[in-house]
Each structure stands twice: as structure tokens, then as C-alpha cells.
Length: 565
Image (cartoon, rainbow, N blue to C red; front, top):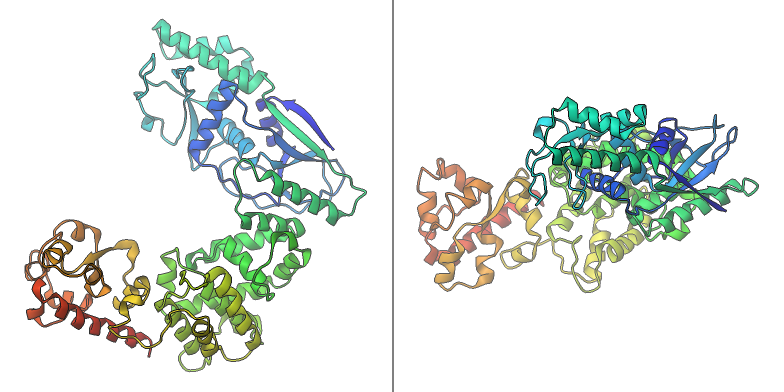
């Protein structure tokens, strides 16, 4: 049963301070950006609707359905507490966290070290202007809007809130601020007074906040009540700031076991540099149980129990995975971000199911070159998979996160505690079938994944994050010469160059003119070596383009083979 009650924002903020309003463990962290918070205060002062808040009502001296954490005053995450018995009646917020958190931070705290300011010259017919800032001197002085008063008068919201609460008199506060700042202009006085009145009314006196209290029937089994509330949480997510499907899965898992919150947070903070996201970690938990396609509706308490009971094993697995990436010189590739985590699922799966203890697993790659039967086949499988772009969409019904994961899992689960099944996994690609090869030549070079090929070309040191993809011989000249567009854009004619050089000095210049000018290329021999440029200078003219790219293709293939022997 739900009971609606209206609140004043000021009272709600006080009760947040007293921890009467708290956040159940199923809630995610604060996600609103500063701009969205600023706009909520404008909405509040205009008296517009901003949606109701829904809470679970928990009674004093009872064990709550979920463990909880208080609201944050500075935007930093606060871990949930394990509570056996409540010391007071409390309301666990299941919908409206971002709005209540915004009011709390704006009126009593800060975000990213910034406090909220209110422009007391705001034109209420246009917008009540609010802005978060660390340094008041960095706030804009002039308005770009067509306002009656073109300049700003920024005032700290926390200070205004305190003064209005202490005096309970908006006219007195307005007069004091006008006097303190020596405001003489009548229009400015009027604007300050109107804005302070609007703030006083909508924040302190008017019941602008609607809160629906859901009373829990404690006579029902605890698990049934938890599932009911998590389902309500999921439905409420259809409006407001949406959670991803995996945010919802995380909420469901945390609903089954509050320890999931700390486990997920620890793992993500420690291993985000290899692309371990919440989505990937949850997917891995399901895959480790041989389930490639777990549906939200079928998530059970056993999934959370598996994760918590095996948390140390999973930690050891991911530590070993990171060691493997460093040993195989793919750590920097994954650190760049936006890389498919799919191959890492299966390396992790294989490691997790090795019949060795956690300490041995954490040190599994210490002697990877001389005493590890898994390292080389793992590296070969990862390199060939990435070179072929297997984990990008390849057509013919191959969807990496669906088809790929399902078919690879079917193979690797039959090789637990055996040698890593490189050849059997390659067979999955071939029999699907998708375009895949372990034999590289000039003929198939342009069918490979440019991103990883570039990574190998530059000895696994240079990435696209800090470089442009540059045409060695310029497009404009090659087009004039009548060369085919596919040849012009072949990787055989592409190199990685820093932004400034590519977009500045080199832009459009004939290649031979560029490379032979010491003003542009100070160390020509080193440049040739780094960028795999054919040393035969007679090929550096654009009319020799076809011969040039064929020779460069040989150098690229040679570099690839250097790393996939």
C-alpha cells in the first residue's frame, strides 16, 4: 500500500541530514551532471512539476529489508552499512534519488568541489539561473540572454538557505543583501527581492515535494519482499533517469546480497584500466556459471551467492588476466578503452576453472615464458582473433556478443583444467563461417582489423588515442593521378602521425618533398624505420604509388609475423 505525503524541500533536506531518508543498497550512485542539477533548481523555483519521490517505510527497532547508505554531501560514493536494527523510522528511497541528492548537495553541500550559486538578477520570465563553481571569480559577469538586467549577481545558495531559515523573513534577507552590496538601482532591488521570494516560497515554505511511502508487509518472507521491491524499482526505471539493463541487474544482485555492492565497486576501481565495466563483470559472473544468456527475470539469489562465495577466486582471476595482458603486450591496447571484452571473458573463464589455489592463480604468469603451458596458445588465440577483427560484427549471422559468446562458451566449457583450446576456438570461426585466417599476405591485409594491425606495426607502443590516421601519399595528389579509392585508403598507405604534424606541416604535401625536408622530418632513417616505409627512394613519388604500397605491404606483413610466429 502506498501513502502520499507532501513535504517542503527544506524539511526533506533536514531529514536527509538526520538520515531519515537513506538509499537502499539496490540504488546506484549519483549520475546527474552539474547542468542537470542546476536546471532542477530552476524548475523548483518556477513551481513546475518534477515528479514524485517513492520510498519504503521501515519502522524503528526492525531489521530493514535492505542495507543502506546515507546521501552524499560532496558527490563521493559512500559504502552501504550492514544494519541489524534501525534506531529510528527511516525512508529508503527507491525512486527520486537524483532529485533529492541534487537538493541536498545544492542547499548543503558541493559537487566536484563546487558549490551552487544563484543569480539574484535572474529574469524569472526566462530562467532562474543557478551555477556550480569553485571560484566565485570564475562565474560569468555578463548575461548572453536578452534580460532586463544584463549582468549577473551570484549569491551562494547555502548562505541564502541558512539566512532564510534563521530569519524566516524573505523581506528582511532581501533588504540586508541589497544593503550589504550597496545596490541603488530600483530595478535591481526589485529583481533581487522577487528572486529571494521565489526561493523562500518554493524551498522553505511551500510543500512542493510529493513523497509516496510504500509500507512493507513484514509477515511475508524476506526474499519475497525483496524481489517485490526490486521489481518495483525496475518498473519505476522506465521513467526518469534510466538505468542500463546491467545497472538493473546489479540492483537485483545487490538486493539478494548487500555485499555485492562492495565487491562490484572494488573490482571496477581496481581493473577499469583493462576495460572491466560493471556490465562486463556481471556478464562474466554468468559465464563462469556456464550461462551465456542470463535474462533479467531469471536472475536468482544463487547468482549473487556464486559471486560472493567465489569473490576471492574472481579477484585472483582478474589479477591473472591483467598479468597476462601485460606479459602479452596487449595491456596498452586494452587500456586505450572501447575494446571488446569478449576474448577476455574466455581467458578469464579458463583461468577461473584451473585446479590451482588462488595464490597460485594470482602468480600464474610469473614464469610465463618458460613454465606456462597456457600462455602461448592464449596469446596466439587473442592476437589472431584481434587481427581478424573477430569481435567486431562480421556479418553472416555472426553477432559477437550473442553468436560469438554462445559458440565459444560451448567449446571452452569442455576444456576446464586442460590446456587452453586455441585450435578448437579457431575452428568456431572457420565453421560458422566468418572471414578468418592465420596466414597473412598483401592480398588479405585490407580485410584485417586496422586498429590492432596499427598496434603491431608500431611495436605495440603507438595507439589511435594520441594519433591521427594519416595518408602517407596525399589523397588529393593520388586522386589527380587517377588511382583507385580503395588503394588510396588501404592500410598500405596509412600511418599514425601526431595531430599537430598531420593537420599542420604535412597536410597535402607530396611524400618525397615531405620526408626529404629536414625542417619536417629531422631523422629520416628513424622515420622510415618507425613507419615501415620502403627504403627504396625511387618509390617515394606518387606516380610509383602501386609499387610503393606493395613494398610497404611486405614490411607490414613481416611486422605482423614477428608477433604471431
